[in-house]
Image (cartoon, rainbow over all chains, first blue to last red):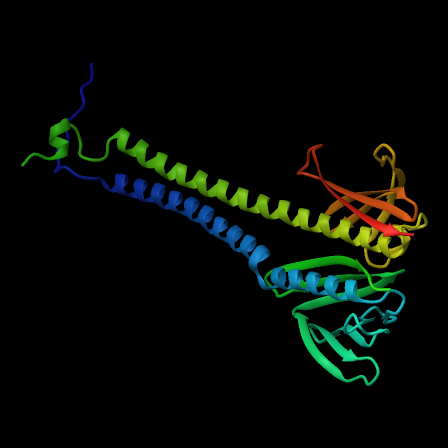
Length: 170
Length: 153
């Protein structure tokens, strides 16, 4: 029969105890840290996808494009041969007998602009930046509707917008 | 003074219960963090797929509306320069509707199935419908986004 020998030295951790526990602790801390960092990264990515600049600008671009095109007159739109701009015509008020305003979506640098002007004189009434961080944009006409294929990217997240609207005015 | 080691009669240090409890806390934290990461990434993917599916449906139905609901509307020819569109087989229209066609549209990493159908609901008024569906994960389950519009003819 063997009996356990009582410790002969002063009570405490041995060097082996300390080394092993430190190693185990370090490994656990590394594992948990990697989980936390990945979780934080996923959350940041998710937040950027929902609240980031491209996501917000994509929402704005969809809304502005649809609203503008729906206001326009069918059969009076023009689009660039390379699809970089589109121009539609619309009525400034219900009392006007013919379309007297023009709205033009065009890319300038990395910005998508909406320019509203007087049809007869060409005078610019407003120039609105619809969205920034434009990587590519293509406009297309199908009968009485217009389509926009837009890609936004600010370096941290990207958004693709494929949308269309039919021109409602006669 | 009595020390812990003296009380238990052995060497001083942490007991097995204490070590197990500590490891359990760390394990639960790690698992919770992993689930949080998984749920976040999955939620973003589902939301992005839904937004893209809705975009595809709006693009198709508004373009078709622009052609007054014409039966010659062909998305694979119309959007060939902008989207990856190919005719698909197996689409079916609801009872009372006429099937225009089914198309597979690739946007990003996913393929969306668009089924287009129409019905003349009154003289000079046509109902056009687009149903866009895409797989949820890798299973058979599909998410569908239907959209209906009316056009005067």
